[in-house]
Amino acid sequence: MTRNEKHPSHRRLAALAAPALPMSALTLPMIIFLPEFYAHSLGLNLALVGFIFTFVRLGDLVFDPFVGGLMDRTRTRWGQFRPWLLLGGPLVMAGTWMLFMAQPGVGPVYLSLGLVMAYIGYSIVVLAQMGMGATITSDYRQRSRVFAWWMVFNTLGQILVMAMPVFFADRIANDSSFTVRTMGWFILASVPVTIAACVACIREGDAPTQGHAARLRDYLGLFTLPSTRLLLLTQLLVGLGLGISAAVFLFFFTMLKQVPFAYVGLQFVAFYIVGVITAPVWSLIANRIGRHRALALGCCGFAAYMVLMMAMPPGNLVYFFGMGLLGGTMACSVDMLPRSMMADVSDEDRLASGQDRTGMLFALLTVTHKFGQAMSIGVVYFALDLIGFKAGSTANGALALNGVAVLYGIVPGLLYIASALVVSRFGLTPARHDAIRRELAAAGSAPASAG
Image (cartoon, rainbow, N blue to C red; front, side, top):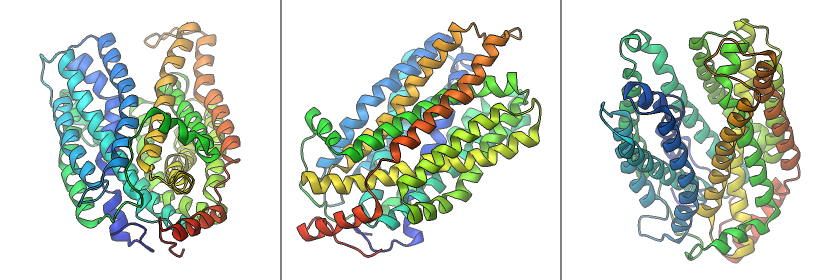
């Protein structure tokens, strides 16, 4: 498939989206399961494990803009992004093998190297895939299809990996490391298959402009467009909201709402299943009312979900899973739509600058989201310590428990409302994007394919 195909087939869109499956399957275990695995099963100091994960993740924030700039300079006979996809896959596999198959006796250096390799490979694969998704079509409505397919595979990977503790519950009871190794084998098996499918089915055309060296002032120059500033601010607010609620998720439901731990994990699965089902629906909504309005709607709906969960009667599992359907629906929108919106911004930036800076723009998008989530961890644990909350205690007072509830529902809800207000000012409407495509076509930068 060449750049700006008029109507990409379902088969090719599925192939393009396929690498999202193992990439999403990698992210959740690295947050939920691997820290516990290294601290308890492998015997590393808990505080040291937490420091290593945090330090490496902060370093990853610097890497994304760097590699995004390199991608924008890449010009090869095999395309602009495909070589990077082929480079990132083996790095992900090597990092996965080190992290998930580790044996007792490994130390902090081993963990650090495994994390660095996995995060570098992950960043390369995701940025290359997003770049390919932005360049295979310039049509506003077709881009909704592209990133709806991405959302389907991204969510499917999360469903499969989060279902493993449920499927292997008996085995896990006797061997707590079994679930981690099973997840690792799943990622190792799916990475080469999905990347091979993507590379085989997607044929990149020539990049529309010459490559350029990415410097700090180039990244600062990206902020001259109001569309870029508004979208990144929206992504920052969403990332903060998601990170804050995730940091107290288990505390809120197991301690305040008396939900058994196993059922908390099942809601994750339900969340992701609903996300797969509703991704095409959000694509249709975005095409009908505009992506920025659809994202504002999703943010408001997610804020309502957070507040409604605060009203959940303790132990009421029907309410718990019922509201989970609403949450999964809204979570799909805030995960999918910013990516397709950034693809539109890349066209606007190319018209304004005369340069193809797609990789840099997607790097900024991912860094902004990661930064929001990284900052939220520090904010949450400082706040919990301030109100006297003790994670392992059954004697937390009313102030501490109410503080957990506020951090789970009220604070993220306000952040989502703020993000909706910000993105509602996004001026890159379907009509404006169509005009940009026509101007690019007239300048010879992109064909004006019909919607």
